[in-house]
Length: 168
Image (tube, rainbow, N blue to C red; front, side, top):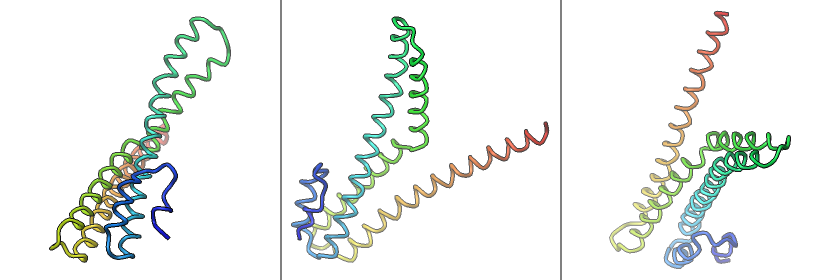
């Protein structure tokens, strides 16, 4: 079974993945590299779409609310700010832009490394695998550091709120 048949019908990075599959030598390496690059490609694209969708909603809804209130007096209009604030909250919660740029950056580094492996005769298979794993692990460590930093901020804020409540 060709690995290309496993790709989404969307065709994300389809041309690159097709050429990659044909040029990689080891079947194990092909499957692993292919699935890793595909995962980063899909994750980056998904977070890009979320980011743009939520940002557009956050921008359009307040403008629409302003213009609609000029012409209509309807109780349903009060839902528009709720939708807008929910959109902004989701942007902050999901961290779509951060994930999108992080995944895209990692994807480009993986593609560059793969191309170097395929083009240079003296670049050994073992070095390729080690370097490939290092790129993925570095992205994971950066993300864990980011999550830990945010968790520390949340814990600090909850401690501060707890102290304020105890003083009352």
